[in-house]
Length: 465
Picture 1 (cartoon, rainbow, N blue to C red):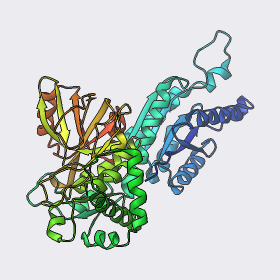
Picture 2 (cartoon, rainbow, N blue to C red):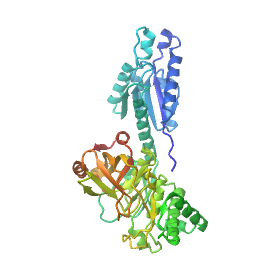
Picture 3 (tube, rainbow, N blue to C red):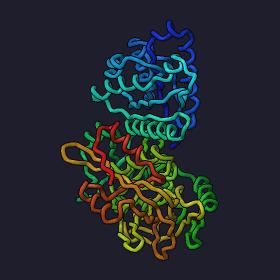
Picture 4 (cartoon, one colour):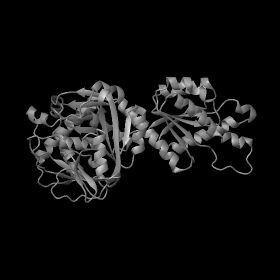
């Protein structure tokens, strides 16, 4: 799952009357807009279709950006521009919006003339246009600051990443292989989820995986096992035959996802033993596919599987599926783990992930080869998408820190010690009070603003603990 750079359209606004008073001002401000495009190029591919000089031209530019299926639109005032001229363009717009108050010069000098004030007068034009945006009820992110400072680049990157994640969600397809009976917080209205959040929920049987497993060649298996020995510290107790079974299952899932055009999948573990043809639970497959950028969740949780894929996009393919297990009041942290699935590509940089022969009673099958690692320590963002009554959704988020502890002697699962900023008691209580689910997504890094922007773009409730 290749991550691409977000694509934004730059809507540079300047009323057409200035050229008569200040000949050359238009080209001067076009050059300034092109400077912004270059400044922002590390975080987004920016399309600039020329200045919006009047209502008709603004509507043409916005229609162009929508037809090109860009991820979002960044509005910048190149001078004053009448806010009312945005009205029809916004009525037809389907892309997320941000408005940035930036200017060519960062200091008012003693020898400035009226021209200098004019080209740097974006504030009151921004106020006029923002008033129209807010009164119209259109979701929009706002920024004011120095265009040369990192804060501006960070704002645009966060907006662009959130807009790109929205695009990915709206085209996402998630495969579901059964659901655990009685598990309440994974249940949702599939149509409401499709309409509001974006992913299409596609139910299938694991026979679709088994049939593709039969087409995996011994050469493919051998090559993958050799690659694993390069990537991981492989347990000497892990037999070639057991390793080969895991690899065959991995390619069965991978080929299925690629052929069907899926971005994520979720499978309930009971199905594999009940089917009778599978020798192991596909923990190895789930971990590898998460490391490749696919979304995954256990027990048929389509919402969490889709959100893992979204988290890959909102970050840098650095998302993990996980669960809260136990509060540690000494470390002031919560330990997270699951049956054995984890994005091993997020392993801390000073350690090497392991691949072990691991006993697992759950599922009643043979030992599943399991990746053991702890993610990169430092800031990390925890999220949950909760289905609320009446087809409504809530994004619950908590900021915190992954601790460097990775020396548990008998924990044969990928695990995380995570210390919430709010404290463990407030975090857990807040999670419960806001219906946060027991399957969660954790991103490496502090990306809360991106999630908050995304929730606004999707028009869903956002709760930060």
